[in-house]
Length: 218
Image: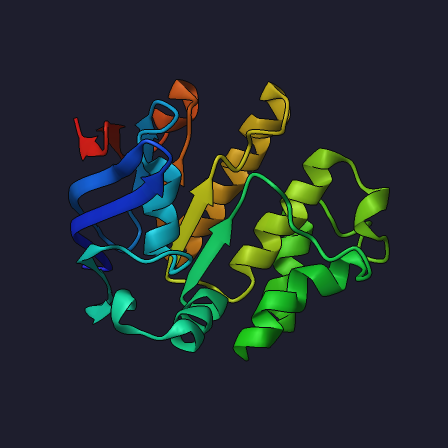
């Protein structure tokens, strides 16, 4: 099993006292599987995604990637996992303004020591970015910037792709096109895909769906 999430708990301190945002979450995801994570705002979706991606830590429980416990790693170890084995697509594009599109796409793969010029060129072509490689992010539309962000995430060929509302800033037609590309490319690399979304239409395109309610799987 590619990903195993076991009994995850997370509590935050608030002005009104402790708030338990995740209460014993557990599920598994295989290589090549796609899974939608849905739920109301505040149900814990993004927190769970951040814990799986090593961006946050759980108070209790384990996250196993290919059998290795991500939570047991130090900050540098989790950062190394995010550079190569886990790819994260955010709603915000997080592109580097001073780098051209070609360098933005290659950035994460170079950091991971997994840069493949042929695969990077394929991603640019498939994402419709072949004619934009010498431009800077500010010269692109929102849809084009999101395609760059997705290409950057997929460039190291991660085993697991985490997507947090990846099309939330795009219009419906562009969102559908971008989702097509994500699903095609993830399928070709046999990566697992876990996507947080409010869209029932996008969730319906995943093979499986989990719904969170009040920090638990409903």
